[in-house]
Length: 390
Image (tube, rainbow, N blue to C red; front, side, top):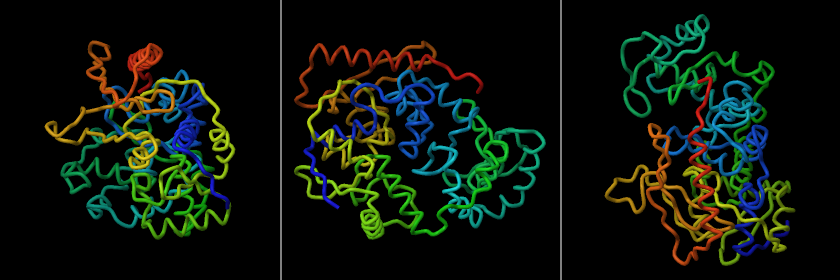
């Protein structure tokens, strides 16, 4: 298949248009949230809430009029989205549930403290069947077990194990506390009864690789966080899969000016790439990107194409941080122009802009400042909105 040739500017514009971050908003309201998640495959979840949780910030930057309530309703009322594992813990369309049966089966075969958990699993399901959704504090189960991050209560481990195996689903949340219910009460029977569409590991990996290419927009066969949680996938396996996808015309090879490695894009994005290659200009927007934003999954790719070196320093010791605890990249037009640290004070209901760091060579204009001020106000207004029904 013929290689698509892009300058770095064209590659940036392609990626940003693909993500709905350049030009007018392509996604709007609850429907736009669902459309965007389906386009991306998944958005990664993280519970840290400094000025909004990571998936909320991803959607805020792309979906016109987005509120926290929209995502909550799609997850826990409409149930067309679901919490489960894709790129680590993620949010994806409920209709994709059958594709992840292989992971659920792995947890059925083995789990940390498996024997201890198995002694209470049926009891836990029985309690939930009778009482409805519960959190670990609702279960009176003494003792602790060895768990993934540290020793934890048996009740919590049992609930999480049954969630991993697909017996339970997250019914709703109160803050960071998860309430679990039987999966049959949360996912339509028609979806639960579907067999795994891709029981062959090679075919499953191929589906996941194409899904990740679509999630980012452009990817190459280099180690990165973009490939996280695809079991048994290495560089040789990715190379074989990409060759297969090229033969099937599912992906297109892309060369970016000044970068020796080959990138890949989904074939359905070829028309968009050609439009970006034609030099068309789009309206500039200012948006703040989430630390786990799909666009940022491959930090080396961002460094090479956007000339922007980003590290999420939340787990970096204070004395070693270059910027701050929870810093968001600032996008203006087709460039990442800096970073902002703006925690939200829930008691005072106020967004506090602690610092803004501009990239070297950025020329600050009145237009840029207005756009930045507007983005700050949107972030403040977004955080004032509370979720009802939780």
